Amino acid sequence: MASVRAVLIDIDGVLTVSWRPLPGAVEALREIRDAGLMVALVTNTTSRTRASIAANLDDAGFPVAAEDILTAPAVTAAYLAEHWPGARCALLNSGDIREDLGDVTVVDPADTDAAVDVVVVGGAGPEFGYAALDGAFRHLQRGARLVAMHRNLYWRTEDGLRLDAGAFLAGLEQAARVEAEVTGKPSPAFFAAALAHLGVGAQDALMIGDDIESDVLAAQRAGVTGVLVKTGKYLPETHEAASGTPDHVLDSFADLPALLRGSADQ
Image 1 (tube, rainbow, N blue to C red):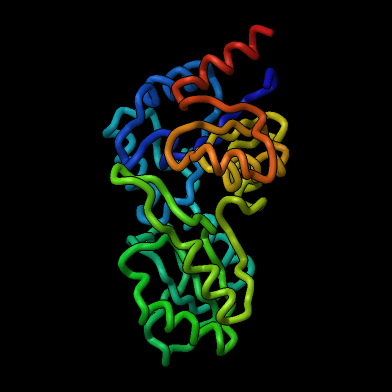
Image 2 (cartoon, rainbow, N blue to C red; image 1 turned 90 degrees about the vertical axis):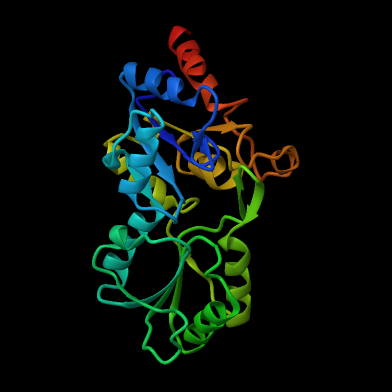
């Protein structure tokens, strides 16, 4: 902890819920910035572009810009360009993220007559109806690869927990007898991309999130110090049943500066 130079921060459930700031989050991020620590906001959010997220957070008072944000769609675009250049991709996602997908060729997943090389699954929403899911299944049956931006089963909104794409992804995998290539958290490649973006090693970074498996334990497996917050999607039963133990547990992101100050004093 004493060597921390950079902080990786999940957004939804850590800084905000339904894009509204959690108590003390704005002030805590400003204090972390003022302390000279590098910051990357790392999110599996697939409903907004990096520019849209940055504008929303800036309006709420958070000191962030688009270049501070690393999203699952942006990492997915880089992954597709490296591993499947020129592929025709059927995108199943709720929200317009095409700006962050760059040159990826996107076709309608419900167009079962289209030639598709890769089925790309983002975040769940009304678009995840029978026709779209069945269309994706038919593309997979014909040999398309399956790439998922994340495996999140649910997320927290101001109305409570809502079902996410991981539940549908499991069904597609079992029905088509394929395994998805995951590009967002908890993929090691996602954390590697975040560290490379900041130019720091894993031993110099800390990850703070509300998802114990995808945020915290996945970061720890990548060599990053993991901090779990009891906000957002946090549930005591999920914490108890987790596959590992966080390095630190805080009530909220507002408590992070005190944790960092305490480590610096030791």
